[in-house]
Image 1 (cartoon, rainbow, N blue to C red):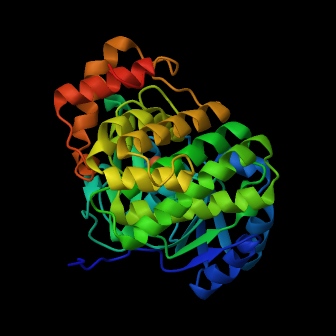
Image 2: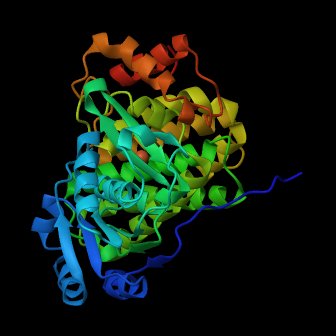
Amino acid sequence: MQRANTLKVPGKVIFGEGAARSVVDEAKTMGCKRLLLVTDAQVLKSGVLYDVVKSLSANMQVKIFSEVEPEPDIMTADLVTRTVREGEFDLVCGMGGGSVMDIAKIASVMATNSGDTEQYVGVDLLKEPGLAKILLPTTAGTGSEMTPNAIVGLHEKGAKVGVISPYIMADAAVVDPLLTVTLPAKPTASSGLDALAHAIESYISLDSNPITDLLSLRAIELIMRNLPMVFSEGDNVRARSAMSLCAMMAGISIANAGTCSGHAAAYGYAGKYNIPHGFSVAVALPHVLEFSLRSCPQKAKAIAETMGVATSGVSSADAGTQVIKAIVSLMREVECPTSLSQLGVPRAEIPTLARNMLKTARLLVHNPRSVNEVEAVEIITRMWEGKLGPS
Ligand SMILES: [Fe+2]
């Protein structure tokens, strides 16, 4: 019997070229008088949000918080908490990549929950709904605009942790592909590979459901086709639109089915070695799939067919191999490193990284094949070497 499924999505989603112009009306409809706008220095400097900020400022008081660094530390969460509590704001707007949107989500809930962010790290620990929030991604990948998660680093521990709660979900997600057109090639590649990891990990997740399956497979298909195009031809609006759609679809999938072993492995080293999130998960993906796909042979075949790399008669083992080859080939095409050694991680760190991977149990519970300590060491060793195929 098909079990009942719940689909968690933002209160409203506005998608399409020029959608950013609707932010002012959304803010006014929410009764906003004082807005905290969270962004980062790079986005501010790029001018991509100039028109939006101008029209917001003409209609309400706007304070800009732009001190969000890439892969933000929990200290940034504490800083935005102080800012939001000082200002009597009634709306938070996050405009930027995943890091910015995650800090905007934290600002919204820390305005109404006492204490500091660290005490809410975990699932469903927030006590009060936050301020209303609108999220506008300027990259296509993290899908943060669609999820109930805010991820921050505990840099002194070299770990990434999440505040996960329905109160973190956006009231409105405004996805305008035109905001991504000027994004440089490297963050375009990293965020696009993050979306691919979201789509694949949510599809093989034990918590996937018929709706997330559809979204994940369609995202995989479109990312394989469009990521090379946006990497080499940044102003290709049609390909940018497809990538924004994919990030959104894969975002809904991870909000409901979760990620699994790829993200569990990546959280163990991305913060400590300052690796862009998308590259950190992409390096893990071929190796965790080599380990995991044998436990979900039908899904391995479906991914291969969606990617167009295997015909219907192929064995599931061969289908899995073709999927992994296609991912590595895409990574090379968009100049993503394919091993931890290329990313500057010392070999001596392998046992620590394997232990870190196992500590991210909240993600590993979704993995189709359970991972023990010996297997984790083997997976991380192969990631370090960038080695695929039989031992
Ligand atoms: Fe991710």
